[in-house]
Image (cartoon, rainbow, N blue to C red; front, side, top):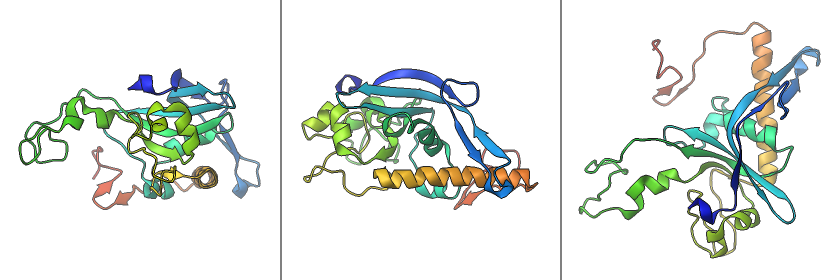
Length: 231
């Protein structure tokens, strides 16, 4: 399926931050009148590029051992900043399609489970779309809602078909993507990038002010201590 997409893996384990070729985020802390700052460093699993006639398009890939999707609520509450922070690092360098999770696993689908991942439906008919786990292997995450950009890199969209590479990506009759929770216009994306910087700045200011109390998040039945000895 990757052959139908013009994006090509260009960088792997791309480090950013001080002393790296790719600059990270350096944010002055307003609470300290700009006399203190926070420098963000990290490593992006993969960056894909497409050299078009008018611009260079990019996308970042984060490998996951379990199926992931972007949750706006978790981002807004400061729990999951990774993908938007990575986009903030890269967006100053090129036009970006988005930031996507790539599911990498050896786990097998269940044959007779009642879950949606079972290979057979209630009438014992084989679910062709689950053979080989193709749907899970599609990229999901944060999409920049620019249909023309995706048409540049995805041959299937040129034919008005569903993308074999990006999960849930298909043009509607008007040539757009419609309203989806993980699709953002360029203006909306800019707001997300500004907001992630504010969240990082607030967290750094609290730490430097001595506010280090343990405060694990809770979202329904999920907490930040799910894989911890402390409950």
